[in-house]
Image (tube, rainbow, N blue to C red):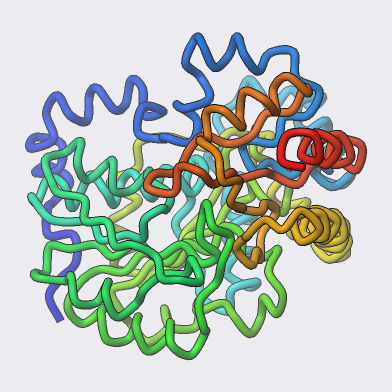
Length: 380
């Protein structure tokens, strides 16, 4: 198997040049999801909305244990100290949860840092990023920014990853194959057995980044996660985040599970550091056994209300395993988005080539009720 990430840290820093310098100053530019919300026109348009249902945040927020942990750290004056030793407990807890050793874990300032770091590496190697379209763009955009090429592969008729088509696009070892399962923006998952076979085969020819950011919200999380494949010493990283089900999007903390060799190299490439409150919140979240199940139940119940309305309106939709629903409106995205804003609801950006589809995040019950009322008026 070809060694992954052949650039040394010295080569990485030298060869990146202005690319890394610019990205370090504003890595948000790579995050199309956030960037699309932050143009002056967009900010002006969504500022007064009552229901921000555009960024897939968990509106129920962190667990009470996580909030208390952050407050304790701040009250103890920890904000004045660098959090060098605090990560040990977090890494141990994550490793125990994932069934691996601490050496398999690499932390990130959100899982997005890992996506960008890996994307930059393959871009600097003039490699390729193969990804589903429409899909999440942070990694392929990082590859392009560093001089590589992004290769979109259209989703299939069920709006799922077309695994056979993606595998056929792998042409060389300097390739990263990005699979978000569930996918963003479609919310769909792929068959677990088929995905495992895909990862086993493709990881012999390329690096696979399996993004399971939303998998905690899907049904049968334990049966769907492929983190066990990491123990087979493959060219694979499974990415996770505390931004979604744990309600910590504002704290920016994520992690990856990969081989000890790859994890060690990624630590050398790290572009950011975690904060003391975010570490404390993550530790408390992992220890709060009932939070994930209870929060997932609330999200799913609200999601089903939206799906019921789409059925009533006769609107095609993707089968979602996430905290958002992707559905066809039959009208240009800009038109629907503007109409929803008039009813004080913001929706996600457009996802070409499906420009008459809308992605709507599941919010708090009162926000969802407002959104459903707006949809009846806009689409009914």
